[in-house]
Amino acid sequence: MKDPIQVVWVSDLHIGSTVGLSPSRWTIDEQNIHQASKPQLELLKFWNKFWGRRKKDGRSIITILGGDLVDGDHHNTLQLWTNDELTQVDAAIDLLKPIVNISKKTYLLRGTTAHVGQSGRFDSLVAKELGVPAYYHLRLNVDNVIFDLAHHGPSIGKRVWNAGNSVRAYGRSIEMSSILNGRKPPDVTIRGHTHKACHETLHGRHTAEVIVSPAWQFKTEYAHRVSTENDLADIGGVVVGVSNGMVADVTIDMMQFEQSESVSAG
Image (cartoon, rainbow, N blue to C red; front, side, top):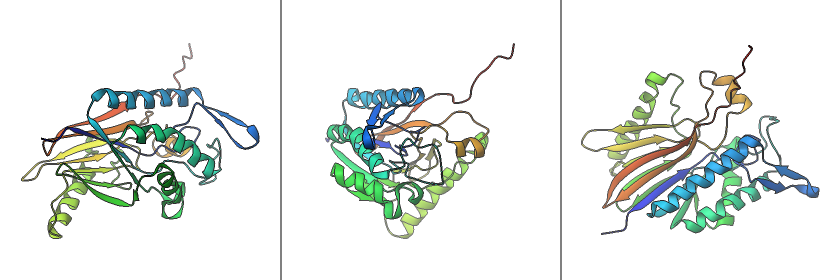
């Protein structure tokens, strides 16, 4: 019997963003110092607690870095503490190296062109410096449990009561495509990109988990404009336990942190 494993997915770190994951302190060119904001320090604290829980769990860790690890220099945004992508990459390597060190295996998926450049350039550079492989799409066999992994996936929509519909349909599409191509359908499908968390289980002859992951970035100016129905950012990671060739458990470990201000006019 093989030892149990936890497959840990984290994506959309957006390092370099003023509302993304950040080192507590980082030296930029000419000795300018970036000091993380109070919300960023809370985010970093949760990041450390998240990985502390993974170590305490005791199961071997396989880490999936799901893309958009840096924010890039995009859309004329002012929400950057540096627009130098290579400085962002250096900060990402610094934050991720300890994670690679505690992981049995680490894999990286390339994210969005707007954030990480053509062909996932900056995600790929992080992967190269960490010594891990980078992919657009990966079918990963973990003790006979098949994971289907990529950065881009379905939107879960804006209505709470139908959020899972598109995720289930997406999972069924992957299932049918696999069958038509003569492959075993994946047992677990994970996608990032949307910064909204959703987990659906497909039942039938073949049971499968379909997951859209949270991110590690608070709501940006853009998100506040297009997503006004919810003042909470979905922040955290996904943990899938594998034991005896089966999915043992699925956890979306999320932080709750309000970005809206509560003010009394009295």
